[in-house]
Length: 461
Ligand SMILES: Cc1ncc(COP(=O)(O)O)c(C=O)c1O
Image (cartoon, rainbow, N blue to C red; front, side, top):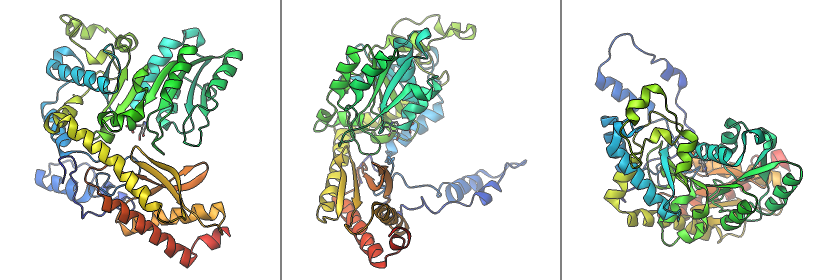
């Protein structure tokens, strides 16, 4: 077992589909009288928490897995025990120094300049929202808000459009651009921006992805920077998933241009092996954060009385006032492991998807829809005699069977309007044999479904 991976390899992974009985859990209710602690803890451990997807299992290969390190859980525990209020210098100068230093170190890893800053937030959605508030305030005059246009791609994570909506943009102010064969934005982006300008609108932000959720694709970051410079637009990079590749010397080159962003989202609870509720948002000019988010209510003035420029009040840099010291668990993990081991664990994730692809390529019926990149590969079983709809059903059925069997968790997604199987493999304890065996099982399920003709011929032929 690696120091990052906590899981038992024997665990089934499929409790995703064996749901808890909601009724029996609701029946527990809130008692008027005290119950013994031991009994309540046992109930948590035996009746509630078992009902969850084992997203930290080495063969949980769906969504973005959550292979959290026990070191992160220890950091969580110590942080909770001390219950640090990490909003102000007065309340948490120790943890604030650590958070600021870790932000500077991480910013340097992605090539952001020394002027950069940021803070820890609950995750990628909050990071995107925080960054886009800066884009709106720095690039749009108040009177221009109804003319503002932001550009995302059809592969951009849904939290970006959600964030833009929360910030007041109407649906017609968000352009969802098509992507090229490699699922990257750009083909029509420049023309769309020019068209909007000539229509009297104000293009103000482009959201690039560094590791899309579906395929791990990385948008052409330097070209987007040039376009943003040409039209005075904010460049936000959603690296919630993929920015972690910057810690692997052999993979950071894939993120070329990420340090040119005006702002960046990066989740630690994805590929930095942290427990949930741990992401970061970075901004090229750290003063931008306080210009957008600081407030000075009378009941907090005492907390500001003695602070100087080096004494950060994190409540002035983001949405939250009261906030936990989220940086501490990542700090603890990095201190104990060292950044080299973290980088190697990330490189291992990239290799896992490559092994899966190599195994897929042994059977020409597997169509590789997007090749292994940043730990993600998507693929589809094909059969020249079957319609696209029948193939959709076949691939869904393959996923259902692997869930029933429980060896691995492989789910589907939709790409180019078709159902495909998707593997996202980032667990440090997953092995080459895990990947090859999973693919061989998927192939055998495909053979079994095709031999039985279930679903496919009935529904779609
Ligand atoms: C690329 C990307 N951005 C943003 C998010 C949202 O992050 P969170 O779930 O931490 O809010 C995700 C989540 O999977 C993601 O993959």
